[in-house]
Image (cartoon, rainbow, N blue to C red):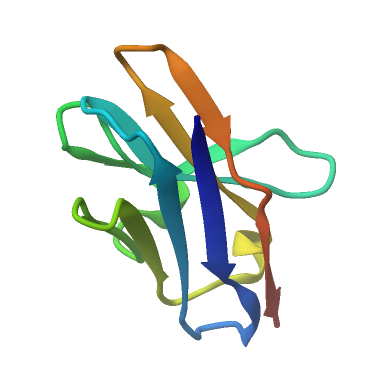
Length: 117
């Protein structure tokens, strides 16, 4: 099995920066997909940023140019650097992992990001 541990998040003023991280443990096989989704109250869970199975990156339209995803394969950790945060960036950020070979999908428990205006 794969287990995801998220850290970071919190309260930040609009225009500020924040970083969240997600570490995967267990048997980690490649190719895999790993990254972040975001959900606000009453809304669906949307893609924020992700590493695809070919190690390219994809970003949600609303965060392009402001957020950066990075990873370290040795520690199976991904980071999301969030800059120029806006109130509409607030929500619960969920780490997502999918292993292609075993079709294994795992979600983290979520970490809260609050942006004050």
